[in-house]
Length: 562
Image (cartoon, rainbow, N blue to C red):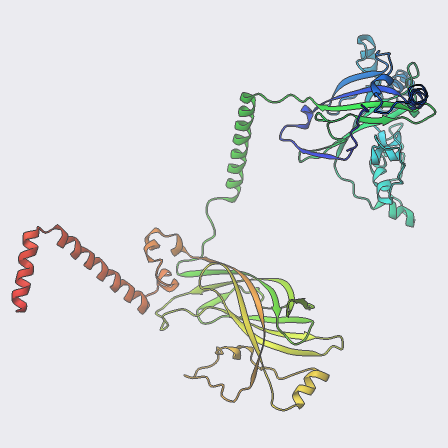
């Protein structure tokens, strides 16, 4: 039966908790035969036998199973294995110009005495200038199965030159750089090729010298077998993926005699023993615990607290959306109003305006999504007895306007929002209205030249703070209901009374009582609590009495009633 090949040569991304230095990969290559021998064998088989069925590829394999036809090597992360070309290059000490070249010269002299463990398989580590040696199509595609030559994109070409562009600045004689660091007269092409993101990936290439026996060391016979990349977050990218029991990868060499090679990649990294894994987890747990204690010592245990009798109120809000308005290109003006006994920071803005936002059709509604954030901080202080049972909360007044391409603006609606009395997350939808004038002239003016009736005081949508009367009459005031505005609010309340254990039983009371006030509501609550305690004591006393005493007491009550 014909041999099947693995055609999935894409990237495989792994996440490792262990250090990447412990990665071990077993690489095995084996020559099958040349394509010329395959065609000749097929012709002879068809002419001689003329039989149908699958052709056994095992019969085409070379009968010579020496080291020239197959090799198996275990490669570690960033482990340098020299090719025959590098061995011949770095043996000459005069050709070694950089410190890395001289280090390779020392290593080659050392293993020449002990012997090499590799012949065809070698590596290019992250410190090598491998991008100067490898063809671009091998770097980008790692084409092991298909022989189709696809042209790389412009971005692929630029990214392929990122690595060696950085390493070209290495000096050849330790004094003169190979490229200029600053270009005072950049061309358009230079600007185009320089704006490429260079990530901090470490790369390692596993190569193979697929030349004929006895002719190793030629650059034209070098072939990229696998690429391993990793970053600082312990992400490992392997291309192609490990075989994992699947079919072999196929490598077809170029030239007149097209050789077919098998490639197998296996992960042979040693797994940790249970005791070593537990020891490492305990070590990390201890390390993270110490780091947490260090961060806690920098932050401290004492938080900034407001003075006694003061409530600190923080509001982080967002104007989410507005819908149901007549015109497009909406924006919102808003401001905060603080009632009595409330104050804010001196340099804190109390008003704002959003950006102009176009509406988007969602069902039957036209919705404008603002996503405009705002923050506000206020303080409530209860110094003396207040006539009000419940304190007044700050209010946010807003006005929705529209602006068209002719710079005509129109008032779309007024509304207000009370600060929530309870802390936490709140989503509030406020409905709006706008004043209208009777007759068609105002409607025509609003449509053609813009402008409409406006409120002199935006707080008139509620009871204005300047109003001192008993009743506010809006009789005869014509309005029209318009759209609605949605707010998302995050409220935080902070006071010393909240953390005082003596006040934990008073959670049912209002904020004024927790801040130390003496309101009438606080007095009523204290009376009710005293009554409940007395009633509970009476019930306990009745339960503790004997049954005969209870019966006599009941008879006395009946006689007295008779």
